[in-house]
Image (cartoon, rainbow, N blue to C red):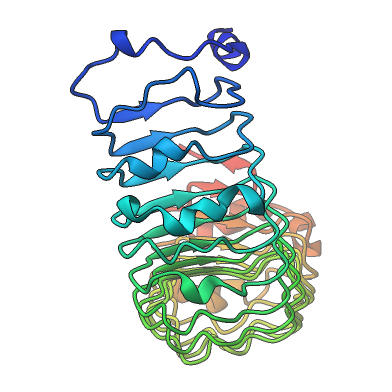
Length: 333
C-alpha cells in the first residue's frame, strides 16, 4: 500500500528534510513533468529520475560537474530532447547514463562523456547502432535490448567492454565481435540468429542465445572460460561442441529437438542442467552421459520429455545424482 502512495504522489520531496551532505537525489516515481520545483544541489554525484513524465532535460543538470550517475529511465525522452547533451562539457566525467524505456529512435550523441562505464538505451525504438562509435572506449556495459536493431556494428573500439546486451532486436548474424577481448557476458536472446559465430572470443563467461533460430550448437568450442550457456527455445537437434567447456556450471537447452544427451561427460563443474521440453525417449545410458557432473549437479529439469514418464523417474535421477536438490519442480531438503 505504501508503494502505491509513492507512485501516485505528485509532490516533489522536501529537500530541507534530506541530509544536506547527501550527494544522491532519488526522485523515482514522483510523476514529475519537469524539475522546476526541485532544487538540484551543485554537489550531486547521483541523480535518479526514474519513472517520471519528463519530456525534456533540465539545463541545470548540465552544470552538475560532480555528477557520476544519471538515470532517466522510464520517461518520455525523445531524440530532440537529448540534443543538448552533446554540449554539456561540465558532465564530461559522467560514468553511468541510463535512457532505458523512453522514446528514442537513434543512439544519442554522448561523445562528451570521456569516462563513461555504463550506457543503457534499452526499450526504445532504435533501429540502428549507428552513432555508438561516438561512445568512448572506456565503456564496460552496453545495453540496447528491446529495440529494432538489425546489425551489430560500430563496436570495434570497445576493448574494455564486459557486458553486451542486444536481446529482443532483429539481428540475424553474429558479427564484429573480434575486438571485444574483455567481454564476459553476451546477451542475444529473442533475435533471428541461425549460426553461432563468436569471432574468436575466449574470455566470455555467459552467453544467451535463447529464442533464436539455431539448429546446431557448433561454435562454442573455443570459449573454455564459459560458465553459463542459455540456448532454450531453438531448433537444436544434437548436443555437440560442448566437451571443451570444462568450466560450464549451467547449461540450458530446454525447448529444443534433442533426442539424447551427449558430449557433456567432461563437464565436471556442471551444477544446473535444463533439458526439459525435448524429445529424449529414455534414461538408458543417461548415467554414463552425465558421469562427469554426477557429484556436482544440484538441479536438473527433464520434464515434458518421453523419459519423464518412466516408472520411478525421480528415483532413478536421485540415484544418478546423489547431491541433487531439485528435479523439475520438486525440491529436496
